[in-house]
Length: 147
Image (cartoon, rainbow, N blue to C red; front, side, top):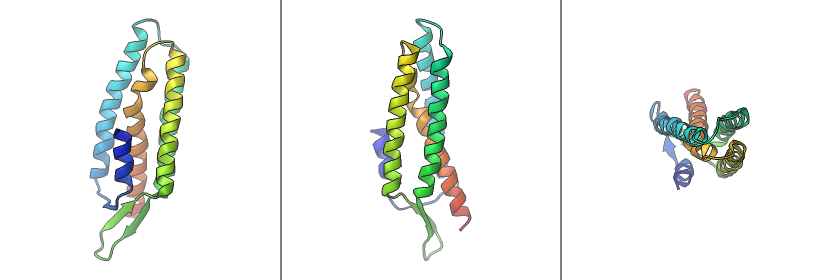
């Protein structure tokens, strides 16, 4: 549901804000840190956390940044007649969001399988969203500043 709201918002025409575009990723970041801590605790409750799930988590978060950068390139950025800088996602943006969701789900399941127990992969969703959306928004803001 949260991902659906994020994607729907991406497809609306809206102004590029200097700070506002970082509020949602920051909130997701806090939730992501808590989620990863909870996920790690759910694993270590039964046995030590091994290297493979941690490496897969890092790969997942790196994929979030890469897909966020790719999505940023698909967002239209322009200046309206009044001089306000606007942004709007495209069909490609939506496609990359769906790809991003599939990547997180796949890697999340792999993380949880590699961990043997717990919900580390599943609980990393907010961190994944924070990094992906934060990367995308920073790069869109950079393009907007260049106008």
